[in-house]
Image (cartoon, rainbow, N blue to C red; front, side):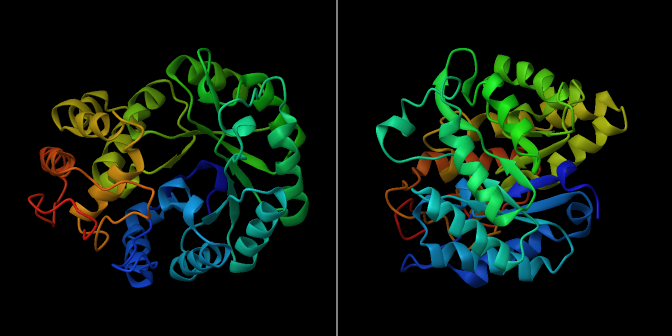
Length: 331
C-alpha cells in the first residue's frame, strides 16, 4: 500500500434515516462508491470527520461508524478514524475504539467546549492545550495521525494553529504524518515552508477543493483531507491527473471552463453551510439517500439545493435527484 501520508482522504458525510438514526446501509453504499478502482489506488477514507457530524455522535455510534468503514474497505484502501470528545479521557477512549475497529490511523480534531477553547485559545502562546491531549491519545493508541488544526482565528493564519505551535507539535509527536491546511491563503503559504523545513516528512494535506489548483501549481499537494470528494470525485481526479502529467491547458480547462472552480466556490462561500452543502451535493448525486443532518445542524434552503444541482450539472457531474424538492427535515 502507498505511503499513508500521500493519499487523497475523503472526509465522509454520514447519512441518517427519518428517525435520526445512522443509516448503516446508506453509509455502506457510500463507502463502496469510494472503493471504485480509480480512487482506490490513490485515496483513503476518514470515518467520523467533521463532515460526518462527529460532534453529535455518541461513543457507541462513532465506534460503529468506524467499524462499518473498515469492514467495507476490507483492506482495499486505508481508513482513518476521527477522534473527538469534550474531555481528553473521552478522546483517548474514542481513539482506542477506532483502533479496536481496525483503522489504519487517527484523524484528530482540536479540543472544544468552554469559551477558553472555542473562541479564546491562543494556540501560539499555549500550544499545550492541544499538545497534551495529542500526547495522551498517541501514548494510548500509537497509530499514524493526521491533524485537523483548528484554532481561534488570527489575521496571520486564519483558522489554523499558528506556525510555531504547529512546528512544536509535529516535532514532539513523531506519529503525526499529515497536517491539514485549514489556514487562510497567506497562512497556508507560510505553513508549506514550515512543514517542508521539518527534520522528517509531514504531508501537506490540502483541504478545501477550491484551492487544489493553487496547491498543484506550487507542487505542495502531498495528499488531501477534504469533504469535496463527496461531490466532485471524477473531475477532481481528472484535474489532479492533468497537473501530474504537466498538461496545464487541460487542468485549466477542467478548472475554469469545466465548472469545477465555480462549484467549489459556491460550496465554500459560506462556512456556516459548508458541511450541509457537502451533504446536499452527495444526495443530489445519489450517493446518499437524503441530506438530513442532526439538529442543531441546519436544513438546506431550496435555493441552495437548486444552485448546487445546477453547478453539478455544469461541471458534468451526474445528478440523480431532482433539485426541485422540499428543503424540509424530510429530505
